[in-house]
Amino acid sequence: MSNQGTPEFATLLDEQQTILKVSTVGYAIYNLDGVMEYANDAYYDIIGILDKRDYRTRKRVIFDSPVLPDDFKRDIVKNEMTETVCHLTITDDVREYYNTSRTGNLDLKLQCRRVLSADGSKLSYVLCITDITEDERQRRIIDELDRDKEMLMRTAGISTWTVNLETGQREN
Image (cartoon, rainbow, N blue to C red):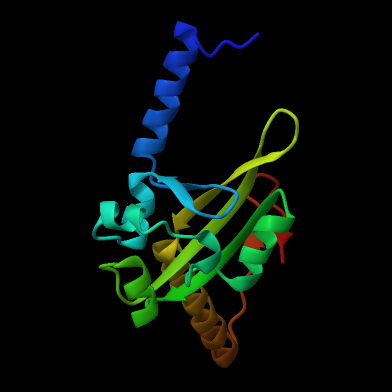
């Protein structure tokens, strides 16, 4: 028996839709042909899409996306769950395909999952996009500072050690 007609189900559905709407993670749902059927606001914001209505009416196919790496697109069909991190340079092709306001570079974490029916047949694909550009920029700065510190310490003949404050033991 289905509980889809119950007030509890309606409340749960409303809560899920609210979560999708306010999330900073971009979500897009694609049918089995790879045509986008739905995307939340964060998806459009991350990509920088200027005209959401125009983008939706052009029936974008996930397998034609200039943003997604080719191996990721192949894996979507083969695997239940696929994920990758990609560095994207916003080129003229990308700007034209998405009609985006974004420029420069983006670092994206991409995850795609097949959605299955109760009998195990494929229903759709859900793509999650997280903009990790700032995280990656911070990581690169920290890595550069660590390299500079190591070079300075080697040049000056300085060494350091770490002490575990709980045990008082020196760790290398």
